[in-house]
Image (cartoon, rainbow, N blue to C red):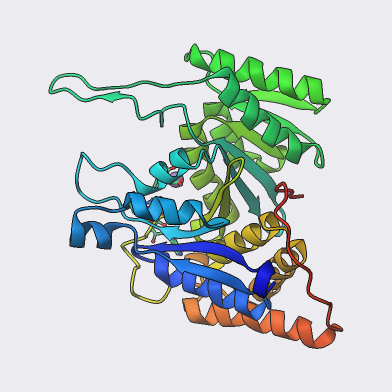
Length: 345
Ligand code: NAD
Ligand code: IPM
Ligand code: MN
């Protein structure tokens, strides 16, 4: 992937543990033999404190010229007027599908979260006595997230539509639209109210395969899902649009452990693997994921998983697993990577 085949990746390490876990992910990509043209951008709280701006228009232009973004995490500054950098990027690049796979030794399911509308519409009125946020559900928004979920479910067993249509009239449109898409595509499908889904996720998580839901429900259910598989630090995500994509661990900047060198880097490493798959290098993605599993199986665990390893130890274990695999295997000629549809499963 060197020379003409090199992909340009905007690296937004961000705040708190963001830079710590992004460095781990970059180390693992290098060990996997991946060559990328990295464009590092200072974006986030640090930049906001220095300049009063967390993300500039020129950064957005630079990002648009890159193939995709590798993102760490950003701390929300203590300012009610502040609009999240991540939400700005999702909106500006129309990254409508937030794909969050959850895997452990005995669990394997995916949350497909609508990523541009719902309660994240940005339509807010703030008053002294009353404040409002408008929850926007559109047919087009529901259709395209249902299609993305069906793309994944087509290679798996079941689609579950998660909603709250017993209370929220807007969710009738979401539910009916998702059902229509699943029916047209011949995907086995059921639906569940979000409160029941939250309960089932804890009591019977094997029930789920591909879950599709609206923006805020997906945000909350995915942190819950992370708890079910063991830690927020294990979980990765892809924010996908028609022409851009952003890859990030699902966790935040974790100020409580920032700078201590104990953040779990696996979510960021897995996000880098998802990025390689999206960039068309499924082989690198598969090798990184396999190395993560082997490293975890050998007991490389940070304190969030009950272990005593540091970020650097876990990163080193993943790199070690990649190297060990390389020495067992004959070299394979490098191929130019082609951007293609995201496919998991
Ligand atoms: P958080 O996800 O940062 O942390 C929640 C808990 O999980 C903390 O106890 C933290 O130590 C732990 N944790 C998270 N990631 C971990 C990892 N990799 N290894 C080990 N432990 C990990 O959520 P929060 O504390 O509610 O938010 C902190 C800040 O991050 C806020 O400003 C929030 O707005 C922001 N945030 C940003 C993103 C993002 O940029 N993608 C996502 C969520 C939250
Ligand atoms: C996530 C985060 C973001 C969200 C925040 C930081 C805006 O929690 O990606 O899950 O709410 O979508
Ligand atoms: Mn979240």
